[in-house]
Image (tube, rainbow, N blue to C red; front, side, top):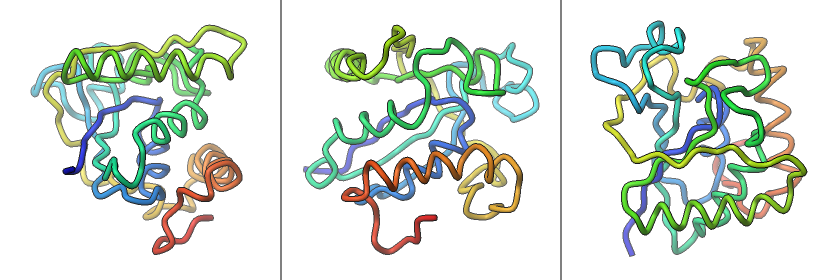
Length: 181
């Protein structure tokens, strides 16, 4: 089987980017914008919340080694999929919890993942299922932000606790070749 790529949104892409890079058998991670046009696929326009874009992460992985359901379970357990257009202090549609599907089969798989995750949440999951539009790579400074800028307050107060949760709950799926906080 060949590698598989999924596009997921979980608030600010810095968080999910960092989490995905720590998982075994993830072969590529890109912070991207999706849902809007090429003309508005830039950080300052997307931050306005008016472009239709979501900050998302394109994750390529080996599904024979890292089951997609594990990736989805990590996704749901490391952000709050019950808040509409919000993750903590990040507010707006660009921070929505979303799964971007490329086929009807993937849409059904994503819906099943939502249904499975719902048992772990008291409030309804509001993660949207959206057809995958064109993806536009985010600017270089947003790629692997946490590893490059761990001293930034957002990394210390928002991302580091998510990484600690990842380590506590998903240690068997973490890469051995990359240090985890």
